[in-house]
Image (cartoon, each protein chain N blue to C red):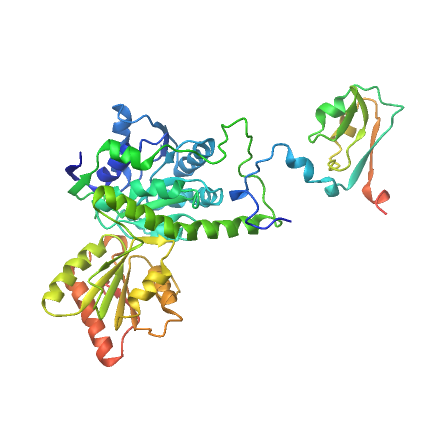
Length: 94
Length: 392
């Protein structure tokens, strides 16, 4: 971590988009599990995700970004096809 | 051309603001600051300045708007007094923490309650640890001079901090005095063009201002502020000297008056320093070796200068126009004693809390203080803290 002489004054962030370097996925207690078979690629999950944790490839849902997903469960609630299920994080952290 | 005018402290402050011609002023009226903003808003209405004047619904909004405009890159000012400053409180700290250069005249007034509109220093002393610089003014001339210099100090790259310029409510703010006003062009040149550091409106270099700052970096940002405030020491000196060249009035962080051979030195802030000077002159004629140390910069506090001047004295009287309840005397007294700690010579230091809520202080009382010092030197007995002018 940088010392006080090496950082911008007053807490200014002078690098655009650097939130990507600050991983916040460790806050999660429930993990969204995506069922590829049920998914129709309506992308409502992508619209509703308050972070940017729904990963798209060529316009299609390919999974969640667990480095930033905080487990809020909005994607699971909004999915019209019950293709996302929230499961306790403890089942995955061994 | 320099003009000599008869102005109140508030009119002198407004004249300085007109010449600075800030991009944005956001302010809310409060006695005794009101006439300062009256005068300045007239300049806005008459087209004498290009300032965007934002009339807000409270001082909390005034300071918030100032932080927004300064962050956007605008040269920004506001002004307040007492309870207005108190209502700004949380945003006052944020301005300093975000390293926002800005100048705010604070016309000193007692902080309620009981409610009172007259002068003491309780308002600005309350935010002495906010990270703002604080320059005190002895008279209308200094109010004018300090506002102009403060803009340069605030914007200096080694400082980048907000500056409060104070003058005593009514005693200075509403009293007409002779004031020399510099030529508009001279002030414009002295102030110079403002080049903000990483402004929000520079969209080619995007910046986030005021993000959440938790236990991993908060402490480092506080440590930076310490350097900023301490760097102001040299900057205030340099700018005070530069200002002296164009005005004939040089400024330091302190002003010494007859201290060279003084055995008894009074220490004071603001208008009382002027009253003490009159007493020093009178007592000097009677052969008493008395002097005055006026503190102009309360933040940063010039510890080393104060110590080198005061250690030669045989006794010191510190005038505090505010109370620090339950502490060892008033706020100035604490600084003075702390400055002397570690010195070989530690003359007796007596504290006089005076003038609260606009209670007058007169020359006879100040003479009495010097007599107290004389007695303290002779007997080595004295009362450390006295309340000067209170009815027992």
